[in-house]
Image (cartoon, rainbow, N blue to C red):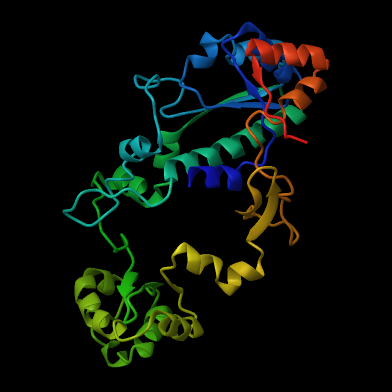
Length: 348
C-alpha cells in the first residue's frame, strides 16, 4: 500500500543528494540559488547542522521562500522532539474528542495532521512567493503539524477558549446540531444525515412517516431537539433501520436534505458522480506500468492540473537536474561514484 501511495501521489521530479557530503551540500546550495522556494521537513536544527539553514540558503538567494515543516515548530521547549501524524493528533487534542464517550480515544481513519500541515505549508509558501514577486524579499515559513491540527479544530478550540469547558468525545453526535449523525440501515450499511435546520427536520420526519411528532415540544425547535437528542434518536432509529441506505438517500435527497451512505473506497470510485468528474486518471510508470491515481481536487474553469507524469524512480532526475546546473556527464558520474548523488535513470 505504501508503494501504491507513492505511485499515486508523487508527480514532481526526483533527485537524491547526500547532504552530509560537502559535494551534496554544494549541489543543494546551487539549486537554491536558482530556486523560488525550498521546503524541508527535518527535525529543527538538522538543516542548520548541515550548513543549510534559512540563513545559509538566503546567503545565496535572498529572495527564496524557505519553508520548514516539523512536529512542534522551530521554537519552544519541545521543538527538537520528533513529531509524526499520530503523535501530533494526540498532542493537539484531536484524539481526545474522537470516539465514543467513556471509551478509549480513536485515531481518525486518515492522516489528518500530515494533510493539514501540508495544506498550511502550501498556502504559506505561495503567500511568500507572492511577496517575493512584489519585491518584498524572501520569507522564512515555520509550520508545525501540532499547530495545524489545533487550528482546524474550530468548534472545540473556540468553545474551550470562550467557556473553559473541556470538549469531550461525543461519538456520532454533533456539538450543537441534532439530528446530525450516522444511522444503521436494513442492508447492513450506515447513512449520514444532517437535518437540524427546521425545514430539513420537517422533511426528514415526513420521509420516515413520523410527521405526527413534529408538534412534540421536545422536537419542535432547534434547541429542543439538541436538548432531547437521545429521545429523538430513540424515536427515529428503529424506523431508519427498516430502510436500505440507497433508498433512504434517494428519498431524503429528493427533499433537499444533506445525506449520504457511508461508502467504502470501492463504492466511492464506482459512484457516477466521481466517474463523471474524472476524479481517477491514469499514467504510465516506467516500471510499474499503467497506474491509476486521484487527480487534484481543484478545478479552474472546468479543468485542473494535469497529471501527465507518473511518480519518478528514486533519483530518476538527478542527472537531468545536475546538467541544468552546468555539470557535464563526467562530473555527474563522478558525484555518483562518490555517493554524493544517486542516479535512478530509466533504462532504455
